[in-house]
Length: 453
Image (cartoon, rainbow, N blue to C red; front, side, top):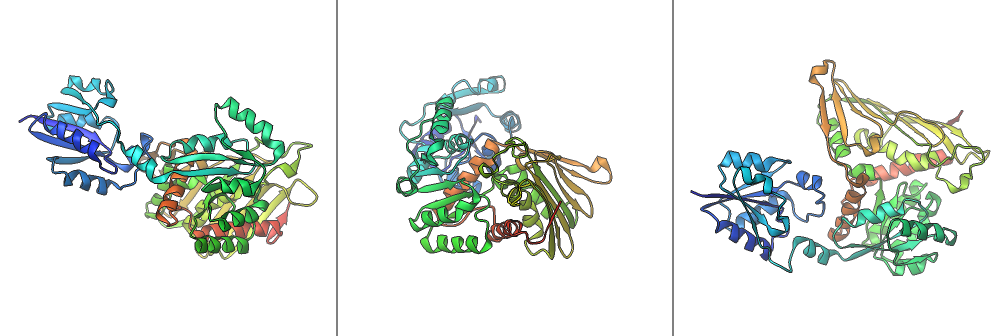
């Protein structure tokens, strides 16, 4: 019996897939089809799958062409599978020609012609066709634009910002070889030209900008915090629901695979009951703490780092803390710009400490303490690809590694687009968490529960 093996994602199974499977089947007597897992696809940069692994496997099974269906889960598995199943022929589409020649030492390798004019990527892009624009001031807008390229059917629509920013943005576009379809300082005109907006303006401007976008039935991805008022944030969530739009808080850390796994391990009981969380986020790169710095150009420490630092606290311990104490050092007489802030949260059965700064430096680590062990996420924990579970006996320690592409931005954008398509908020950040973040930042702004140092 001649055994043939082939692999693929098989998302939105189409005629091209079926023709390739038919040709593979004709090469032997027994066909094994490997379907890539969601996690393995992520490591290969495939983040746009519309269907789950089970749905994709069911679609392959329904063709009746596969004698056996397996899951491809890791790099190098093809060699293991060829040996395990006694494979005679390995085959894939001709667009991979030469890529798998290294398998010729184990079996025959045949590249089959693909059906022209159809692909899963084209089908996904045809479904979406969504344009997104950027509202606000940032020197890193180009990162967002580049990450959007990984999301099928999502197009960069342009930028709305203050006119005095035009020259620097156009220079950056030239340096990064990017084209800006539309650049304006007129927000209404900007909203008329896009389907969705990514807001990265200063937090005090978020409320009016989000409200105007939602009233025009535009979907909104807003850099955290959504607003600096829990009342305003609640109003905007209600307005989004009324308008049938998505309002999503942008904290890219929430979409990093390693961070997702940190939460799952912590919630699984692997370290026992959680008794403490310590999260630190600091950065000196924008010079806010330097003499003569124009503070009104900057986000303060709590605005810039507070939402990220509070995220694991609220996601693991909840938002119903008993009390909090905020300790801040201010850089201005009006006490609007904190260079350093530390918050202690007290829960009935746990405690948490959040430390943020733009005018001080500390180790940017995350530590989740449990009764049996603890989780250690090294700096910078907010964009980590690695963490450890540590115990009393070092021999019991576990290490976890996960690939991080695009700092989590592309995964965040995929979740936003899927939410728009399904009309369901698929964000990894619960509305209660967003409201709790706004509440703490509002209290900082109003100097409630704040001690100055």
